[in-house]
Image 1 (spheres, rainbow, N blue to C red):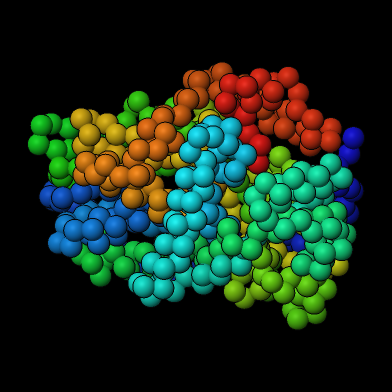
Image 2: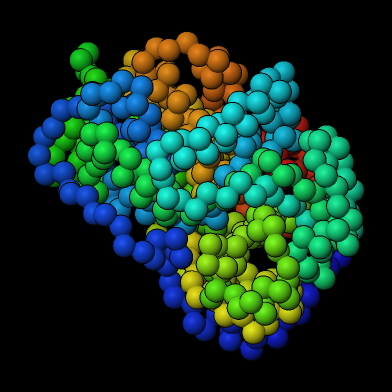
Length: 468
């Protein structure tokens, strides 16, 4: 059975649309303050490894909780260079990657998890306003669209369970006009949009203003622990502190025990040139809501402040061995597929050109949301496995990890979701075989009215299934 996105698109149109696209994230194509490389041995009260959202939120919250605390952040490349500067900028209230995933794993605390997720998103918006962060924050809500007949009932059910609004085809196309839309689920409050790169740079500015020391181009090589604390060794120096926070997400952990808890999955993204007034009028989108479709292999898309369309998703590619390499970011087949799907969705925009193309790795866990851990006698905390929904959830994770590092017994630390570790991935070659079989099965489900095969049903029963 063919899906909407199996429709034939003229390869010449795809090539023409992609021709101007430069490599690199649209979010990072702006000047940013540079920070020095660590070249000496320093002491701190807390050392944070990783300069993305999780590391910066942890540093900021640590100094706000206890002013005067000396926090040092070390980043191997530039701040926000990885997932934090390459995502779509969707800030979702969910801490569990959707209600269905949370209900399957932690049904007894689902209401609490959903409340905490809403509080976290509201708190993020409040922090942005309080700190004066210029991040193009837009609390637009989100729209999930059905592009296949069987997805319409999925969204109707989801709207009832989540107390959202179900839209028929006409109402959905009034929000954003595409001939592929058969219905929609509207959530007016659960999502905000943000400029990902600005969020990194503004968090960094807030950190520096409060005394945090930020070091770029400073790769952490190893971590040693003794009775008095930890030492993080880098290529040019070291940081000695009583406590450490590891915020490396998809990249290899300094803790051997944590290295199989996530796998890096590549996500590919395009951004158009700014739409003209005529092009924007051809599709509507007055609400500026973030959009995704309801398939297992889904697209996500949104408008930027200057009216570009950021269009990503669908392909989620794992390379054997979990290797993160620059050439994986230049997978032409994924960009061609994304462009073809864009033209299928918006045939009225066949004259639009893409200005940027990029890719990045998602830190995917077997439970499809963050896991939390303590190691080295409680001196080292870590969180990872956000599986594509970390823009807002990293703020919550920073609070969880600081609570645990400082011995604070809070509502957050008592959550089963926090106390329960995720199931690790198997080593190679089993990881690659399992991931590729799962991807194939999800594709087959999309081509079979959503019906899940034996493999997916088995994974569901084991708590390893994914229904996004």
